[in-house]
Length: 105
Image 1 (cartoon, helix red, strand yellow):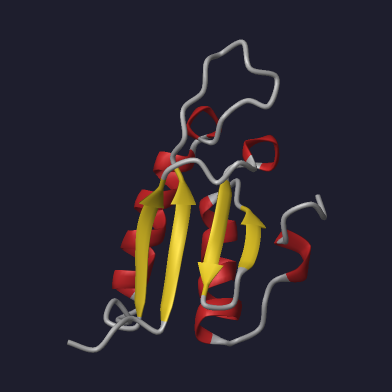
Image 2: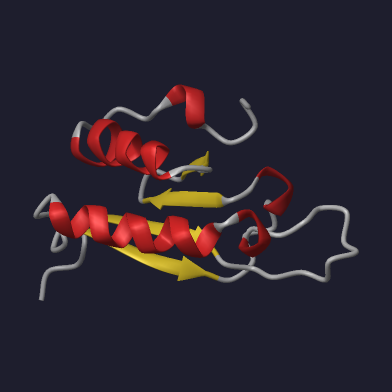
């Protein structure tokens, strides 16, 4: 079996509610992961792109956190519309989405 060309990891970390950094799970990362999976499948590229949940990526203050390999591009993804933009422009189009890069928002 051929390995995937692109691997998307969505942080699913859950921290104590008192932690000042918050956590990606409380910011909706499960819905982001589920939508990423559905949207990749709908575009007919599931053999090229793999979407997985990740444990703590240690960036919850910017979350929901998403990292894409092998490029090592980090995103803050808050909506399903942003997922669509990342899939279409970055994963399929090959061009990272500057406005969604982690730390730019």
